[in-house]
Image 1: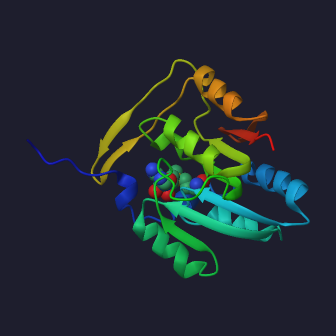
Image 2: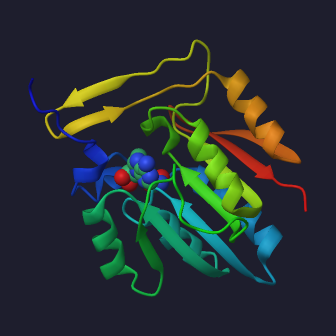
Length: 203
Ligand SMILES: C[S@@+](CC[C@H](N)C(=O)[O-])C[C@H]1O[C@@H](n2cnc3c(N)ncnc32)[C@H](O)[C@@H]1O
């Protein structure tokens, strides 16, 4: 049997990938940051970011002026090393979104941007994010959920990668079960539409 390569995300050293793809200026960042400023302007927000890559979410969050106690996780050690050297004041941890080693309710906000598409499936990650969130879970897709569901595992030279498009029905049912309210917003820049789900848990 041929030995298989690991996940591309565990191996990539291309920390600049999102900028090169022109995906670091998408207005979905501004939508979320605007919402967070409305909600957390007068307090320190404990924020968990899942799948950090280049640390762009952190950099843009800092620009808002919000007081933020930020923790970022990723499964790419080279990505985390780069974030640690650029932003040593924040916490950067090697961890999978499907198995978060934080206590329940540890963060005001748990964010996950352009990540669920890269998992074999979303359910464990979503349940883990809601477990560690006290109040809000923000999930942003670059492949907005749409029928029919398409689960695609692609082999590349650097390792395999999942590029999934999920069916909206079961996904939104799960969010509704775990939330008090769910805001769903489509935000476009040119031909790129991001789908944001901003979920509020009951207190
Ligand atoms: C497409 S990038 C998105 C990066 C960033 N959130 C953004 O919007 O620019 C996906 C990121 O998720 C990370 N990732 C993939 N699988 C993960 C997992 N199971 N747990 C945590 N991070 C993961 C990848 O290493 C990569 O940094």
